[in-house]
Length: 301
View 1 (tube, helix red, strand yellow):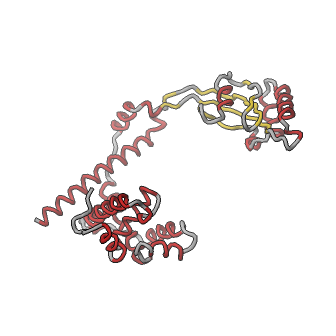
View 2 (cartoon, rainbow, N blue to C red):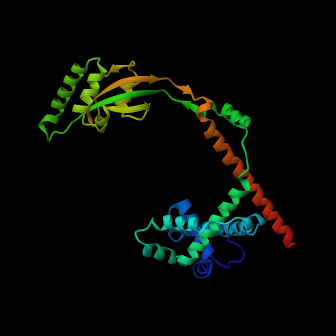
View 3 (cartoon, rainbow, N blue to C red):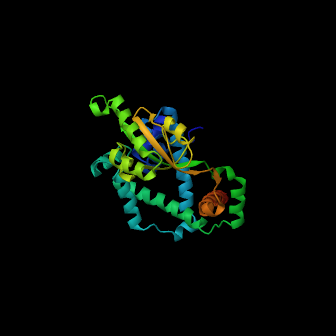
């Protein structure tokens, strides 16, 4: 990707951006933060050139959108601009730190607010021109049928848990004492869920003790491998053997088994509809922008 023809060299471009063109500097900062999570001044030279070219293109695109007839009817409330600016400033320790940060890129606070307002207006224009895009029930059903693997819910199990940790600095939590304590609890619990809940609340050293040892409903891979191996080989409403992990010794209770299932369309219909609507809106916006660019070129000839 080459630097735009109006720039004689990379260094001259950077000087121009720093001194005269707040909009390009603003867009470069935005692009660099979104893509690389740092300012463009921290990037390698090749990356800076790429960001600079993208900023020029985005600037032209934004100006085309803001010059459209649709933009004439869109206003961004001052309250929204101020709220968005406040959110950005709050990422810094102080307002002064924010102002110093943007001034390093040749942007004053007033310019930053104006450029932010333009960005919000561009977004508002795109939302306005695509707000009437609809998704039919047939489109939702077709997407669901063609992507059923995305709606497969793996087998899960409802599990409760008791933990006795190992800490050789405390006699009662030495490895042997911890193992003995939990073995006695397992013997007391036997096959009684209510007893398990009681011991979880009174003896477990896991935060789940606050909820009678309830971990929740989990798929394979969410717990320690040693716990997974036991849990997913157990019968419903059964107690495990004592299990050792790096944390200590555990007992788990398998309270429920929920086999893999295909989530019904009725449960994901709104999610699918929202996903498709966003895709259709984005496609419409791209077509609309392309038409604005063509119209602008025609008007210039």
